[in-house]
Amino acid sequence: MPMGEAVKKAFVTGGSGFLGRNLIGYLGRQNIEVLALVRSIDARQVVERAGAKAIEGDLFSEDVMARAMADCDVVFHCAALADDWGKRQTFYRINVEGTESVLRAARKAKVSVLVHVSTEAVLCGERRIVGATEDQPLARHPSGLYPWSKGLAEKAVRAAATDDFRTVVVRPRFIWGRDDTTVLPKIMEAVQKGMLKWIGGGNYLTSTCHVDNVCEGCLCAAEKGRSGEVYFLTDGAPVNFREFISQLLVAKKLTPPKSLHSLLAHHDFGAYFRRDLVFAANLRVASHHRDGGQVDRTRSHS
Image 1 (tube, rainbow, N blue to C red):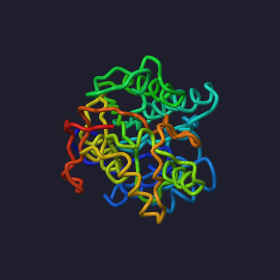
Image 2 (image 1 turned 120 degrees about the vertical axis):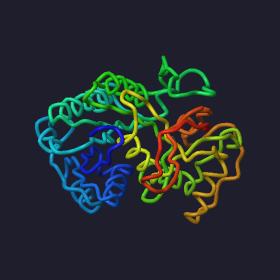
Image 3 (image 1 turned 60 degrees about the vertical axis):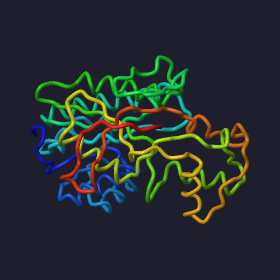
Image 4 (image 1 turned 90 degrees about the vertical axis):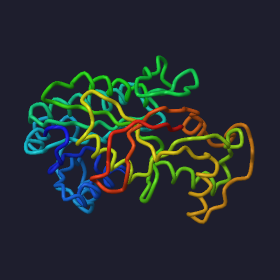
């Protein structure tokens, strides 16, 4: 699929997750046929409800994936182990070797484009980052096993780029929106138990990316992203972290905590949220219409 052409058929990994099932629905609304990798009955039900054809297998079922990918224009690789804790070898197996397996399957199927969903966390290390662009080097000492493994996966994806295999990396920041089964439920549980407190008052700027914007950004990257490149995905203008989280909680009929403790004394969301990153570039979705998406550079915070 040459750059600039519209996607007609896509293969999705991680389709039963928060982003994956929203991506399936979004692609379907663009009249794009979607196939999604599943490894359980529950996952099959989720992706089929979202509108995809389920393909049974896992990230290491290369032949299965290759056959399913054969007529696809693009692969969206959303699957990942994103836990806060775990074994190093498990993160490496799923996030690095799993990505390499998907790449091999895509090449075997002669798919022309692969979009890899990564994270801004690959930049998080021992020092604060301000004014970062996509050219910012990966953290030398990543802040955890998840960003460490995702950074290695990014390297594999970018290294796989060739003249006839366009690979693009997207880094959404703080995905939020309907049907969130990841971050917001944890925050809500902490609030209900009286365990959530603000770091330094919570009054710092951060970038966010609504799940609809992540989906549109992924499609934009597939159709217009440059091979071997990385793009941040955000909602645009940065927001006050405390105000943003408070609005989400109020929408769920919960009262935000008023404590101004300098640490999250009872519930460690600190490592997840206290990323005072200031990004100088991202992939901006110019409108809410498919034809309006564009690869562009703009200033954002995270």
